[in-house]
Image 1 (cartoon, rainbow, N blue to C red):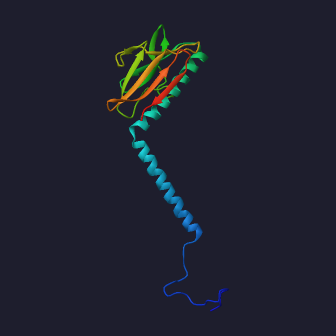
Image 2: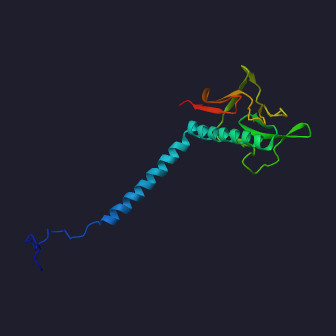
Amino acid sequence: MPKSVTGRTDRLPGNTGRGFTLLEILVVMVIVGVLIGFAALRLRDADPTAQIEQQMRTLTALIEARCEQSVIQARNLGLRLVPGGYDFWVPYDYEWIPDPDTQGPFRPRTFSVSVDLVLIMDGQTVPVDDDRLQPQLQCLPGGELTPFVLEVESGGRTVATLEGSLNGKTEMEVFR
């Protein structure tokens, strides 16, 4: 057996000289990291407040996009809040009708978590129900938006608010 630089030629009993390569250790670390990432995502998705926050961000973006669309099309466009969700409305022949595009971004939506929506306009609570045949909120061609405050309640407490101002801007807040 050839001598090593240190002069040792013997091996310890039971030591076959085999170990893990750096590549094997890195592969295991990557796999563990991916598993931890999936676990963290599952835990985050299990949090109802995180789900509501994501859906409120979607609603905020859709309202802003709808108001931009109203300016571009030079016509009023609406949003109707219903128990647990919302849908979009368009004017047609001097009346409001649900947006006929049921597959696009302005399709009817529901929250994935059980929520109660409380709509406040001009300091008054406005009913949120399916019986209403017109939108509560309107985007106007001049870039204006019906001023409102939307409180989202879950588990008996307010978990988020969305405020829309006359200048078409929206502001969301989440309470953890």
